[in-house]
Length: 128
Image 1 (cartoon, rainbow, N blue to C red):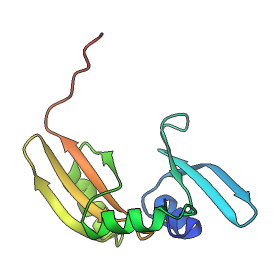
Image 2 (image 1 turned 180 degrees about the vertical axis):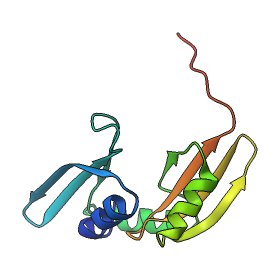
Image 3 (image 1 turned 90 degrees about the horizontal axis):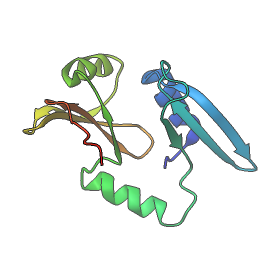
């Protein structure tokens, strides 16, 4: 959920380097999905307007409390931090070792905090 979809486009595509997958306008509303440029059929991130009455207070409370809305995995949080900082991205937490992972948190400019996570050990998935 974002404050401004056009501004979100500029940040997520122009600054973070995501690729637009879908861009849908319906009346006054616009929804945008972006993906990793190397994986156009992979996971998509939906950037949608805060149209529901609960969206604004919900996201404002998370941000005020310093809680990220979502997180992205990274193989090297320190390198991502330096590269994004050089592009003008504002971080609220520098890379920090928190035990099983290293995390950093940045402001996405459209109302959310986003966490970068580097796992120190690969998670294994056990078959059921």
